[in-house]
Length: 284
Image (cartoon, rainbow, N blue to C red; front, side, top):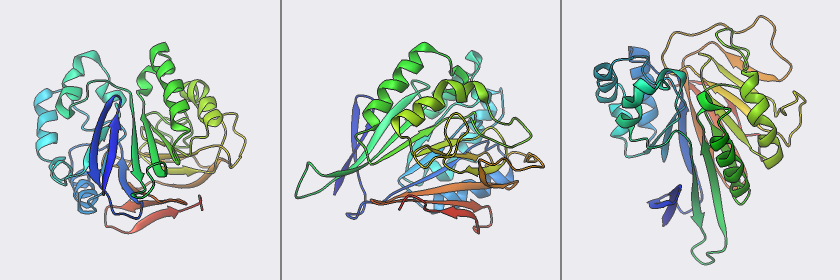
């Protein structure tokens, strides 16, 4: 069965098993070390439909070193046959670092896409994942905010609504912590439009929140926020006291595997040795 995959005004088709199931790996803060290589190899071995990096890919201001990361560390993901997607981190954001976007084929730093399966007998029936990728370096940019509102309105037609960017609105990592500016600009919109998951990095930890609203209240109608910044770079500690909105957190290298089904999202945080760090499917 062919499935439409749309980015902006472009539409592509790829195949997924007839029972709707879309798999995606996600991680951030990758680097070029041996840990990063192990995580990349393990993520590639799962052969998901999509690989998504949520920023800070290689930590180099050198175009030559960036190319080395692309050729060596990231090669398994490129060769896996999966769709490759990227969000810009702060280490890719400077105007002089345009080579990063050129390297991975990004023409713009925010975009949206819809991954859909249509019923073979009734084309009006479908299961969809709507993914919005943002540039949190430009969280206050009016053009991006207008795009976000339009994309969120469109995402309401989909079964699952997912947003990804670099700087976490909710984080108890001591490296950076919650980005309150991003939270104040974007999180009220996530609440309003019913976003299911928000995927971020920046703090070099793993953390999953309870469903939490922009005002800090816990409500199942608000998103779950995930910090997946353990892709290979040196790790950060977490705060001594765990915030009430934090459900699970670890100082551990890892990547995420997301499986989107018709009735739930299965989420696994996977350590570099392949064991499960955290797991939930709280959408059934």
